[in-house]
Amino acid sequence: MIGGVSGAIAVLAGAFGAHALRGRLVPDMLAVFETAARYQMYHALALLAVAGLAPRWDGAPLRWAGWLFVAGTMVFSGSLYALALSGVTALGAITPLGGVCFIAGWGCLAAAAWRLPSRPAA
Image 1 (cartoon, rainbow, N blue to C red):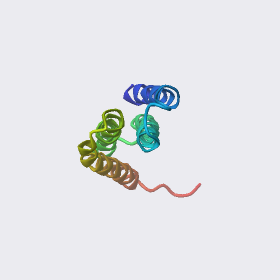
Image 2: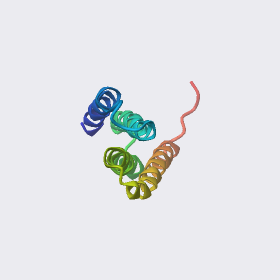
Image 3: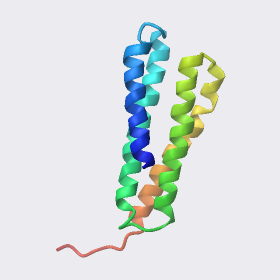
Image 4: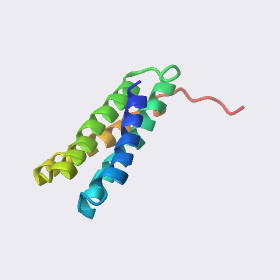
């Protein structure tokens, strides 16, 4: 559910940036907004993948991956949206924390796959 909602928000944000903000934001801030929407969409899709794998890949690393993708989206994309719309550059200082959440989420996803029992080739 969270992946679907996040994907919808990413599409809305992308459309808002392309249509309502073009001409209202300086190009650098529009690019920041577009980066936020793009990373939100990547991680909405990653959340859907985590949800799809959950019935087959049980365990803490997969759950951690999902929650880290959620936290990363909120901090990374959220801070970039706020930065682009407000111009408060101090918001950019917390953006890397969201990036760390994304990286940790991908690491947890890899750990979840690593923990799978090996299967002989068919």
